[in-house]
Image (tube, rainbow, N blue to C red; front, side, top):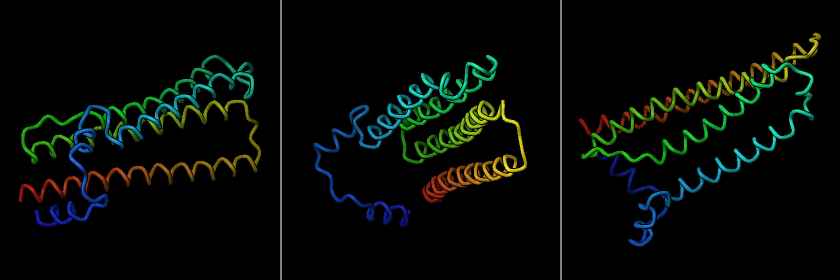
Length: 179
């Protein structure tokens, strides 16, 4: 418990004025939520622009309907991931005590972590399948694809490690409260 108190006191940002704290507690007014909302809006706009031009720019008209549907599904999965992240961060924990609230948030975080990794992997796979559909593979292209696959696997492994670390740290704080 002492580690949690000392970590709390060492957080950057200094003292907040009561008016600033009240403003942060109002629904959707917290700076982190505002930043997440901005990120989701920008990503959604950019992916919508991509979907508006991919048909002609990336020869969508020359590919079968199911391949185009895969691309649209992949982009929608990435946008869905962003929306889920925003709503997950926005969702308040309605438990009475701190220990129960942390336990509930830990369950939510574990659930979201699984969805986060799954949506990223599926979205990326759908987008890659669209771009790989009509390629005639040569040795150089296979090597390039192998390197791209390696980079993606490392990124997904880092994503899993990031979520595990977040969950572990929250679990440790909960254990300290219990102990």
